[in-house]
Length: 170
Image (cartoon, rainbow, N blue to C red; front, side, top):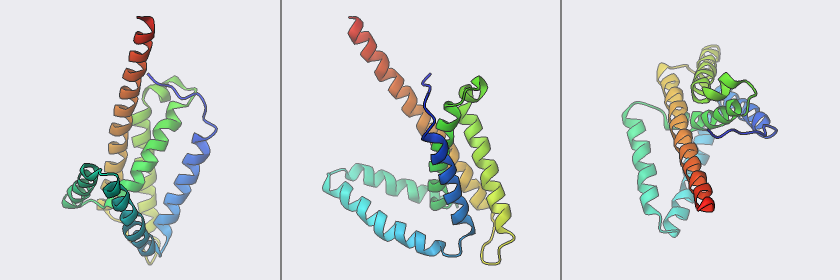
């Protein structure tokens, strides 16, 4: 299993990202952020993928967003908690505690879900925000999706590294 030894970047990155998620959950100006993501980043991503002749990736991304929306999940929550899930996975993977390392994915989902539920609970006290079960499920979906992607990435990386070692031996 892949083990991250340096956590000097992972710990502050995870903390800063968690603060960013909290800021988004208490902000009354989230509409402007969604507009920025949709119009600016979305348009730039479409432009880059089209220019690079990677329309297959673009179709996959658009299809994924439509699938998420059909499930009554919020794509913004899924994406934000996907990022948190990736960071939490590597945070636990870099731990000195063997149990945290062994069950990094499970601890990432548990920690991220707890954080998401607390954020939703906190929103109940804000007059301009509302908490919803759908948002909590969107958060959970993003966290689980992140673990699946990270585990596939780690397994693929381990397989590539294993082939490289085997090729050097031959």
